Each structure stands twice: as structure tokens, then as C-alpha cells.
Image 1: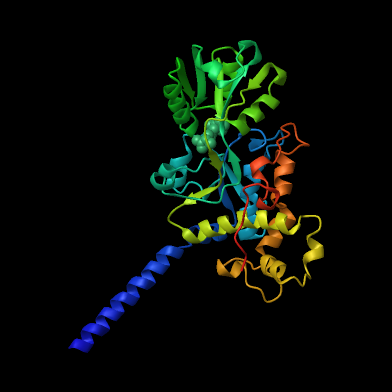
Image 2 (image 1 turned 90 degrees about the vertical axis):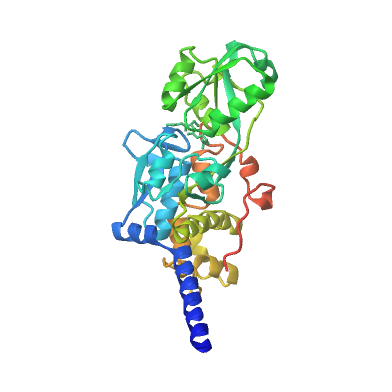
Length: 345
Ligand SMILES: N[C@@H](CCC(=O)N[C@@H](CS)C(=O)NCC(=O)O)C(=O)O
């Protein structure tokens, strides 16, 4: 009798562990991407440098390339992506409703989003902060001066931007009226037309909008940064395996840069005798992608087709683009920045 009870308890325990493992892994999103032969990625289309659609209708930008990297990792094809344009406010429902597999759209990692959105945030791909832009003719050169003015401030609805600026106005006891818009283009139009004295957003997007405006020299981004905006890809919390794939693909982009492996020289590394590189690229007997149920050489596809982190950054945002963004804190940890990946082993 006693033995039977113990056996029953053992069965229940094993079942619970098995069930737990199955839940922790899941994999339904990976399966659906593999069946469909395409990754559905939610993106911005009005943020040059991060997410836009060019005249030929192709999507491009830093966040868009992160979608392509994940498609290359899973499907071996960086072009196997269906891009789904989303406004800021549409993000949580698109993610929760399964309309998209993942989101790569200048999205800030916060506690409430990590929980209430039912989301899993991948490692930060771009460390940003919130800034404020004014017209030079407005005559204000920093936040303290702006605090003394009566200001109509404009921001995108459904963003951390509107929450942070509300905090800031309260802290500074400033007479600022906040107008929010669903559409980012509408803010820029209102600001250009003089309906907004100041335009607040992530600094990277202010740089983007200033550089692509009719007269960039007419605008000033104030030197004050009022928040931390760690931006990165997001996937549904229900699928830890898929989240792991995104996570390790992002870390793979950092690691490739750290090893000095890029889309041009990767051929030189395909017979590397360095065990760390062999493991990273999944060469020979090394298991890499198999841990997730994808190709062992998944990082070879990512690097060959999309490049390493530095290539993605330089192509979309770097000194040779109109945005001319320095790497700053977005440099590798070995260069004094914040990008740091755990070991591929
Ligand atoms: N990083 C912030 C802001 C994201 C955001 O959507 N920002 C605006 C301005 S940078 C934007 O991209 N708007 C475009 C749109 O909503 O279509 C967040 O995650 O809430």
C-alpha cells in the first residue's frame, strides 16, 4: 500500500516535471514559422534608420535587419520575412493576439511591459534615452530654460515618451501642455507647422527626424536626456524556445563582431581551428542551433546574409549615413560599451 502510494507520487512528480519542461520549452511559434516558411515581424515604417519602407516598397533599417537576422537563423533565408507595419499603440495587441511572431520596433523594455504585455524582451539592441527637440528660433537651449516657458509639447501616444515627459513636467513644475498623436508623421507636421513648440521622443528618433527634415539646421535637440530607453526585440512570453532563439541570434550579432567575423570575411573562418569559433559557427561536430531545433550553422546564415552587429549599425545609423550616430554606449564591452554576450558553449 505504502509502496503504491510512493509509486503514484513518483508518477505525479515526473508528470509535473515533464509538463513543466514542455511548457518552459513550448516551441509553437517556431513550428508555425517553419510551417509557414516565413517570419512575421512587427515594425515601424516611419522611422528612417530604424524602420521605413523605401520607394521600391522594401523595408529597411536597423530594427528591420534584426527581423531578417532571426529569419536567417530559423529559415536560412533573411528574406523570408513578412513585415507588419505597426503604430506604437498597436504593439501590445498585435503581440498578444498572435498577429505577429515578434516585434522589432524601437520598443523600450520596462517592468510593466515585461509583465502586462505578456512579453519576453530579447537583449537590448540599442541603448537610447528620451530627448526634446525645439526649433532654433524658439530660443531655448536646454531643459532648465524650457522649464521656464509655456510650451505645447508633442509626443506619440502609447509610448514611454508620454509617461516620462509627464513625470518630467511634474518634477520641474513646468507649464507644459502635452498633445499626443497616434501617427508619428502627424507630430512632425504639427511641429513643423508651429502647432507644437517642442517634440519629445527617443533621441535616436529625434536624430532621424531632424536629419530627414527640410532644414535640419533649423532644429535643436536639447543636450538633456531625461530617461533610459533600452530598445530591443520582443516576443510572446508563451514560447520560451522562440524567445531563446531571438536572444541568441542577437547575442550572436555581438559575438561575431567580438570575434571580428563579418559578412565579407566569414569564409576565412569556416575551417577555423579555434574551438570557440567552431562552437559559435556550429562547425564540424559542434552543436549550436540543434539546441533550439534549428540548423547548427545558424549564425553562418545570419552573418553571411545580414552581417554582424557593427555592419548592421554602420549600414543603417553609422557615420556614413545621414544620421551619423556614434556607437557610444552601443559599442561592445571590449570597447567600453554595454554590448556583452554570454559564451556560445
Ligand atoms: N521607445 C518608446 C517610443 C517608441 C515609439 O513608438 N516612438 C515613436 C516616436 S520615436 C514612434 O516611433 N512613432 C511612430 C509611430 O507610432 O508610428 C516606446 O517603446 O514606447
